[in-house]
Amino acid sequence: MNKRAQIDAGLEQSAFWMPFTANRQFKKNPRLLARAEGMYYWTADGRQVLDGQAGLWCVNAGHCRPKIVEALRRQAGVMDFAPTFQMGHPIAFEFAERLAGIAPAGFSHVFFTNSGSESADTALKIALAYHRARGEGQRFRLIGRERGYHGVNFGGMAVGGIVTNRKTFGPGVAGVDHIRHTHDLSRNSFSKGQPVHGAEFADELERLCALHDPSTVAAVIVEPVAGSAGVLVPPKGYLERLREICTRHGILLIFDEVITGFGRLGKPFGSQRFGVMPDLFTTAKGMTNGAVPMGAVFVNESVHAAFMQGAEGIELFHGYTYSGHPLGCAAGIATLDTYEEEGLLTRAATLERHFEDAAHALRGAPYVIDVRNCGLMAAVELEPRPGAPGKRAYEAFLKAFEAGVLIRYTGDTLALSPPLIVEKAQIDRLFDCIREVLQAVK
Ligand SMILES: Cc1ncc(COP(=O)(O)O)c(C=O)c1O
Image (cartoon, rainbow, N blue to C red; front, side, top):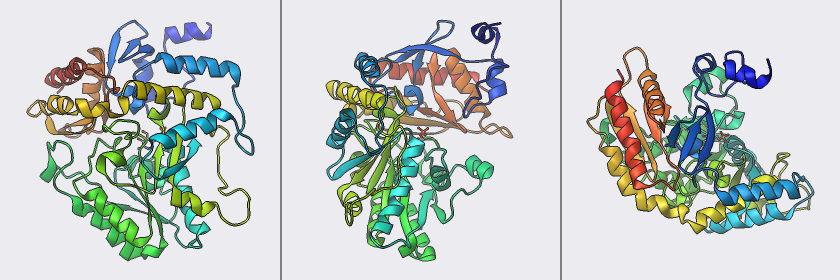
């Protein structure tokens, strides 16, 4: 049997060890996506599926956009690869300028990576190296947050607060601590936008500073809105308080904007939505509209300047073979063109009210214990099935897919983040589908 015939015959013996997937379960009953365009996927057997999760929080301009496709074709024929270690190519410099051009004021430089995980580890390393460059090498501690997700590499995993990661792979990096998460169902359930209660959760950072001595802390990393752990929107005043504590103690504040970057919250970046500026922020996903794996860490001028002193030499001993890959840069520039031409970096703001109303109309539907939203991100949290946490949401995900809608689930939460080109009727379809599915799950 040739390879293709083997796949058609079934995937149970397939060589593909799938990530974050129940492999044996999936391969017995695969869900294969074969084609995509705009707001839709088509399955291998030809069914149309509305994409309610922008691929994996990344296809912000919708699928297979012509400019991006064309840029990739063109670049692949011009120069496939060129190194960026002690060499350069114009398109990488051009893309960096374009990115700095849409960043909040003061974010003068970008360091290219290939994923959100690499962006998280890169940002943490820049923070450590920054303090060392300024003669404060005793700042080695990194502080993250419970339920934070910063990818799967050792640094991001260590500062993250995903229990299965910590259980399976251990603490990862020494000198890491965590503040508590901001989810507070008892006071904030069914909040629209930022919850009212919980600014005081930021004071945990002050407590950890007192415990460890603030002069040992290098950086704090949080997602402006925690995505993967179920769309946890920061309470009013919370990010401001984190910023204030970091500034007072000389600690760098890192925002992980891998999901919230590139228009998801109605502004180009989450920091602009909340009016709170970090010192560094990480991106990936929407940076190339998901078309090529690529990420970047944005660095403010004063952090960058600390490296550009003293004798000339390699200022940051860090980089990836594919940092600034020509195909990624080509896709990224075409992505920014598409975002700008179609106003996508701010379009979520114009749809937010409709999206919010549609999401909160699920209040009262079976098993729904919370609905929360910000920009074009929403979560519908379900009451866990006794003795089987996560199963109800998994079944809802399966039934929605059968009904032609792709949504994401994490634990007992259904998460929605459609491409930013979504139309109001498609928003209605997403939430109507969830309502129907919830009638059918047990
Ligand atoms: C906030 C955040 N950081 C980092 C990552 C990791 O990104 P990647 O899967 O591209 O490594 C993710 C992925 O979902 C994320 O949501």
